[in-house]
Image (tube, rainbow, N blue to C red):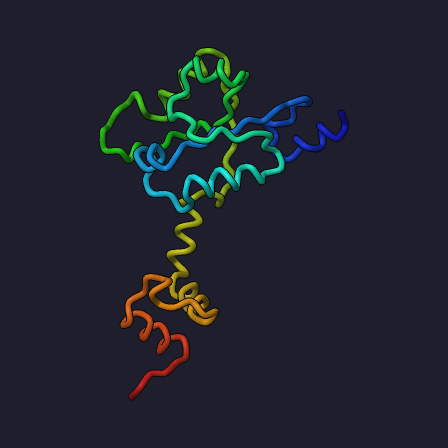
Length: 171
């Protein structure tokens, strides 16, 4: 019992003894439709979740909208999610697919547990840091032996990065 308690100390939501944590993860098609392009493929997301020490089971191809049948099928007692809304990038403007609506449904049946986001840990924040330091990452990978083609970098861009990185300015 003590081991089980220690296991769930980190995320405060999961400080429930004898908890079995199922994590549903949408596939690429659904995620791209409602959230936009992802950094990791669905297979990479599923696998990274399987390696999280608090996750007991991953449900691949989880639906964007969790209906009662899905909750019953997987014997789900609570749905844990942050309460901040996500923008619908599908362009459909469908209020029924908005995060607010989806969470209201789970809240209305008393199965919602709010989680807290960690400041600075989001896909948007990580992408912003990569884009900000793009040139350094390209130079690092070129120095490690990747070709400009591997990195999708044009000849002109690779040359300009090389000139800039090694201060080879000609006067």
